[in-house]
Image 1 (tube, rainbow, N blue to C red):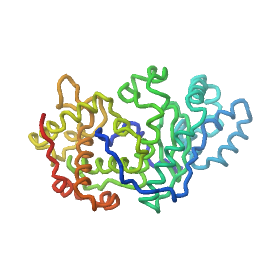
Image 2 (tube, helix red, strand yellow; image 1 turned 45 degrees about the vertical axis):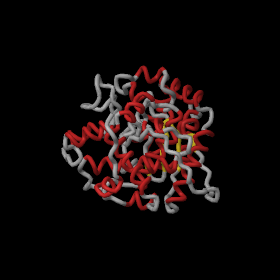
Image 3 (cartoon, rainbow, N blue to C red; image 1 turned 180 degrees about the vertical axis):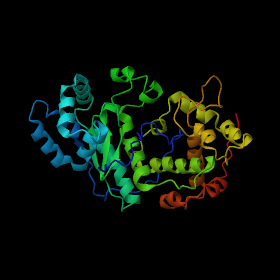
Amino acid sequence: MKYNVKHSQIYLFFLFAIIFISCKQSNRPDVSDVKLKIKIERFDQQLYSGKGKSITQTNDFLSKNYGLFYDDYIHKMVGSPEYNYQTVLETLYKDQAYTDLTNEVNTVYPDLKKQEEGLTETFKYIKHYYPKAKIPKFISFVSGFSYQMPVGDNYLGIGLDMFLGKDSKFYRAIIQSVPMYISRRFAPEYIVPRVAETFAHEELFTEPDENRTLLSKMIFQGKILYFLDQVLPENTADSIKIGYTTKQLDWAQTYEGDIWAYYLENNLLYETDYQKIQVYLAEGPFTPGLGENRNSAPKLGIWTGWQIVRKYMETHPDITLQQLMADQDGQKILNQSKYKPKQK
């Protein structure tokens, strides 16, 4: 049986970092004429409301109203291909952990008005820049921490159990599988940025296969973060975009020149060995090799790429966002950015 989820990877690790210098978007386009109002469908509540009712009727209702998402939920997110809907639903409804988790979600999210407002603003900008972009259905759900933001056929799921707030008791209980440096970002304010980032990666901008060097990957991810600069609500902090703590943001800003010098001194920009370059791109508590006593910010390669792209666009005001995102020449962007941060 074929499933519709495009990626099982959870985009909660923000593999595509984002910077920390507040970038004021003073020349944002007027999007008041874009007719759009985002509504998040509460599958989580509809599913839970079936507890104690006819399994068959609940299945028929969810299948009719949620179609492919419901199929993926039953057979991939919380179940498996060999399980039928009755087995999965009965198991969920008998599971006290599912009940407790759903009650917590309802407490934190009695409604999703704030998130819907943020997504409406964000996708108005996206539609302004990319009028042909197809806006998916947004569906909230609970999967027991299995998925945060799956993308399927015409839907983008939002796993609310992975946005309960950094101090949630549930995250302390799963610390062995999800470390605190990750779960501290499982908070409401991260929903809109993560949706925009996931949509950008999955629906708008595919990384070219030929992107093998650290530089090419840095620039690609930097462009994604610059794209978020342009479409997220203006009050979205850079620290939220990238998932840094204030201390990590300060560190990256303070040592920007030293970080760049480190890449150059170690001939890293044109390195293609995946194991060597991944440490500068992947999620983690810090970036190995940089800083003292493991006090550096993580995924500094992505952060640097973001700074290069920002510098490039600052020095080329005639370049449109669409032109930037279509340009795959990372070397040109670096050269023309004249990026040369001073060492501390």
